[in-house]
Image (cartoon, rainbow, N blue to C red):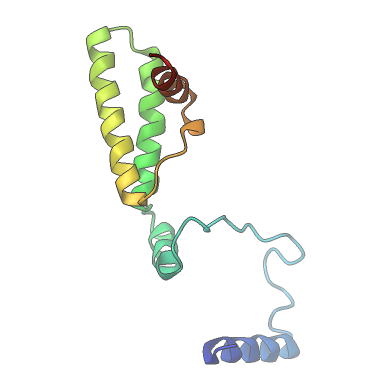
Amino acid sequence: MNIFSTIVERKISEAMEKGELDNLRGKGKPLKLEDESWIPDDLRASYRILKNSGYIPPELELRKEIMNLSSLIQIIDNDRERLRKLRELNYKIICLDNIRHRPLHLALFPEYESRIIHRVLSP
């Protein structure tokens, strides 16, 4: 255990002994923990601060834009506009892959997964 953890544990124990933690809001209820495993360890605290300030990481912003574009493409009637939005979607997926330094899981976008499988398997 590092020195910081030791100090924190000591402070928590002292507060519990004094009864300072007895009447906290949400006592007895489960904590709402979020999965932050995708965030590198050295960036977690920074991302949490930004999130609490109303900002989200660029990866999440891009992912949100990708999901919105995917939904929009499904309802566009104009072929020319759909093609333009598909190109924009492809560009954003490439940008997300570059930021993440790993490919996007195609299972999240089944319309692309089937098209890619079809292209790879067709002669």
